[in-house]
Length: 414
Image (tube, rainbow, N blue to C red; front, side, top):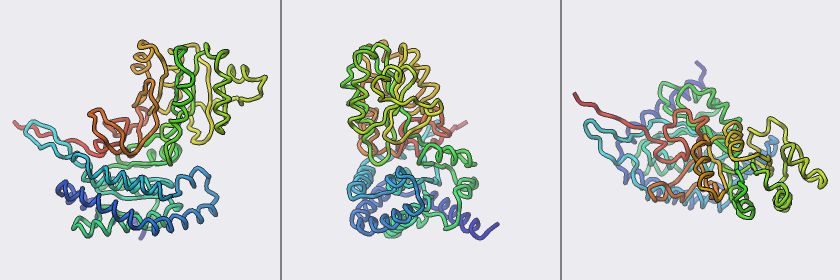
């Protein structure tokens, strides 16, 4: 065993031990720690932004894609969003509050969680808050592009934890030199891996891990525009879905439009997208329809089931709802798809037959990390989205909220 691997095994073990101590901590103590982390982040924003500037400068020299650089970049506004998420977390009900009864079920912490991410220090901060709230310990593993920012954030969190007399290893960093594979194969003490980033990154980490994974999903969401829909509403919905910051989790990138819209509205739809700086691609029929304008490029076959994560939209003409549903189930990401229609029959069929974890009917699927309304009417904080296609160990596909970061214990008495 190498020195680096021994050091990592030691960190994972200490974080595992911390999870047992944290699980016994009262909810008000965990909530107070989250509030104080939020206050410390706000108070030390200058230090955090300086560290982030160092990461950005180094990452530009590494020739990272602009997409990754944008995800890495912190601003005062983005830091404020993270602070708001932490403050919101502290006000939420304790996810572990239901008492354990004989022949009953209680929600309990998962244990030690690894958050493996690329270029998202802000999301790692929110993951730390959510894990503390749910009674889990957490290990960060970011890429080299975020090492300075990650270190500053971890130090701030650990100082607060130490002052609250909580386990020192509640939130840990992997030692220098340790790889993602080194971490996600620590099955003796690690209980869950959450990979966050581009779909290719998430897929790679999910394949490497030897413990349960909760893969996140991003991009390649579909919208079906029915003949009874309103194109102005469709425009508004598409633009709104693409406006989440910094990560376009639920961005509509593929639009399925009924053939009935070819003559009355398709070209106007495309023109409006292009005015917003969106590059439009299409199927054979839509590109042929727009050929005289020279406005639409043909979409390569393999791109239909891949996320763009940039300023591109692909449009496909379909004969009806059944074809649209079949197409989405074959090519979609499986986490957030939409229909725009005035037909109750169509909306019911779409919701019933599309195999995605979250369905939006005549509503924007824009991803909002802080302040989403749950089924019980309460506000919540969401780390990301997971899908039916790649839900791994998740028993709650869809929004990765506090319940997704807990598991259940059942006591049977004879």
